[in-house]
Image 1 (cartoon, rainbow, N blue to C red):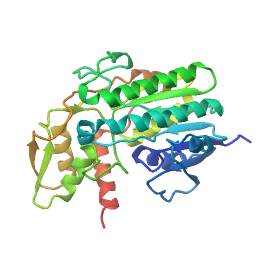
Image 2: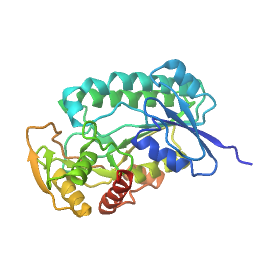
Image 3: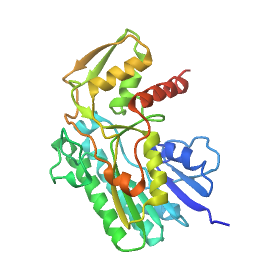
Image 4: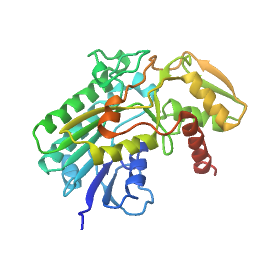
Length: 317
């Protein structure tokens, strides 16, 4: 009989973590242990829950006992306003947390650790960017979070080089879908726009910025699929992969698509005085396709519609 793989999902109550837990708990041969902290657990069959503060070394040591695979989806995150006004919240806690997790994964002989990075280290470009297109220059607005991610990627590469634990780093683009943050204080562009469109009482919404900023947006279902394929197929001691849709959508295009899918008649005003990150970016994901057999399967149109359907059900009361 094949031994069950014990999979620890850190950040299990967050957006990406919850989607991972809900999917992996359905897979035969995986024993899912989900870490909760401040946000309470949710009902999900076949899941063992563990409460832990992942910035505390003792809690991390306890959490990683007898674990085969760690999926590190825990992070301090928020939207454009905090990146502009409180950039420090993305650096210290995330550096401390991941330092403990990476070290304990090595010390406790974890077989494989999957870490979520991001794409803020890339320059603005009208061409698809590969993993090798990081120039060493990061936008001033992203300086803290960008260099923190680079530091953690290099730490993962260092521990992978010691030959005990395999590390996979996923530089994913902007993720959207069920269980995202939809409160306007902490949400990213997509979630904030969905909330504004679906809750508008006067047929008008205000969108931050000029609407010309371009983003690569990937449905969370496709990111979760990449996690599955990384577990099954990632063979290198250290793997670094771009994970995105591979196409740039302007904020204006995204807003228009959300409005169209909602079926509502909404007028848009762009507030150029509000914080926004002026970049154009989309990813070349050829490396992930070659090594993992991964490619996005959810069209943006279908992703928007399915997300709005989920939103209606989740917030109908």
